[in-house]
Amino acid sequence: MARELTAAKADDGDPVPLEPLTGKWSNTGKSTGRGWIVVALPFGDSADSGPDCRASMNRYDEAPKFMLADKRVPDRDIGVGSGRSVSADRLVVTRDYERTIEQIEADDCPKGGHAGGPN
Image 1 (tube, one colour):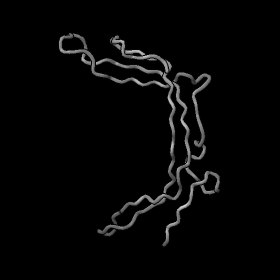
Image 2: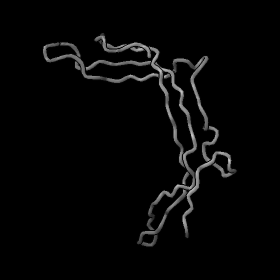
Image 3: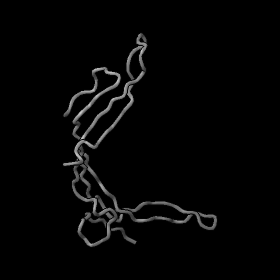
Image 4: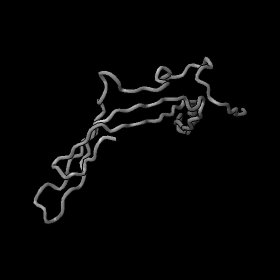
């Protein structure tokens, strides 16, 4: 069996999982500022009797863009049948995405002056 490689097309009539996800999304209107990330970071020094870490809190807006990368990509696998390995290959659809993040607010606790400001 020969393998044929072709460029992926979003509208070729072949069913694609998550097809409605394709395109650019963004949190606007009532969704503005709904992205949050909180990270514990090392903080202080050995002479300091305060906490050893600080919480860095960042609020952001994001705009992910989802695209079809390829179709019928071989996902090589093996299965076990009757005590021996058998081919369990399957063809999968692959997605790609770009994610743009704009920080709109930041704070840290305890205050250390490391939070930074909006983009």
